[in-house]
Length: 169
Image 1 (cartoon, one colour):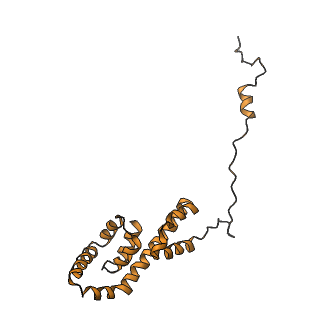
Image 2 (cartoon, one colour):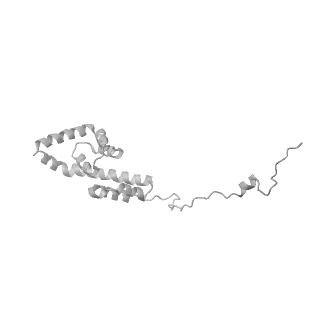
Image 3 (cartoon, helix red, strand yellow):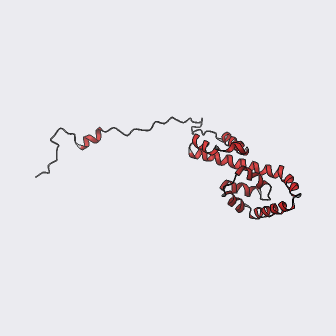
């Protein structure tokens, strides 16, 4: 006896016919990205935004809310790149402004106040000896960053240690 294949007796379509009749899943509509002459996709330049972020970060009252604003305007990787690049650039600029323009003036003012000079020299020695580790650990403490960047310039920590610790912290 041959095996009988079950045929639906009612007017309902079979499973296979039902599978064939389903619509394919909807595809997401995306706008095509512009391509460079070489055929590769062109990247948008976000460097001007990072420089603008760095400039605003140097100006202490204007930096409030810049990172959330970048997060609202761009996708996460782009906003992270803008904020990180701009923040490190602003911190480095403030560090070297403190080192080149303020260090001699502050030291001459501190010589007039012996107690404050001793306290500052203690802090300076600790940060200078600690180098990268000291700046990195101090970056983990929530402090007003733009103001403290100028103060790091008054210490003897190297510029490369400062920039690396700032980028990671």
